[in-house]
Image 1 (cartoon, one colour):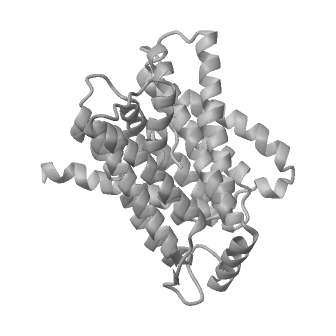
Image 2: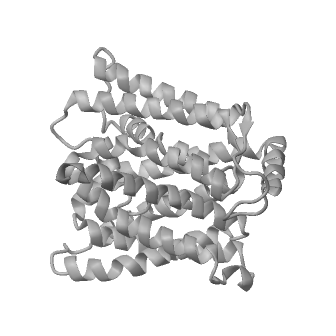
Length: 350
């Protein structure tokens, strides 16, 4: 049983992510402003992490210089505040299934950005280099499939579902999205959000060298993101009614994303990486997509399209191609992909 623990834990992690996609979408479907949601989510994460950071790392934390603080502030704005705000808009336009599918391309985006910044290398004359290049191209094809191809649709529920509105309303919303082109816009916004997140993962590697207290760094970024997201949300939405949280799916989504995603998965993923390595964790990413596809159909009443299934499958193939190339290279130092995988959940995960 001891040897099976990493497999059980990785299933729990991906189930938590699937729940994040579903609850976020449900909160937006129930009228919650996505900018306000990001603020509350980050505030909840800060409140949850602050006691742990203070207790475990306040004595061992290095001094924080003004230059390092500015770098952390910029990272928080780029990789958390902007990434989550753009992600929220994209999720309103699309679906929880698409959000889960595009997560598979994050390691590939991170590798591509690291390649542009010359942190990574690509040797096209070797098998691992070809595999990584093929993975990037395949992920582009998967993203295009998600955006431009719908295909046949299947519905698993008749008229009602648990977390959203009536299924007929979902049908109408999806149909209007396709007609107005908001689905395509949402796909590109989702990729832009992942790009901001990937850039944050790459740049964070430099900041961690200057400020290695990871838990304290995580808490500080959540706190700074709370301030930034509050300023954006207040500028966008002044209606006090939109800021109220009742005992409903809005409060559940905020608490879940702030505590379970940022807090619980931080520990679980660190444990998985310690036991099985970062590649093992990254290879489990498509499980969240599978869970989200079926859960969103039953809980949100989302319609499953052939394009979403094919696009998600193509993205998973691209992910595995890049991971295979990375594992074959066996670079002695931590690569950008290792940093990316280790960082998933350490600050925030969509």
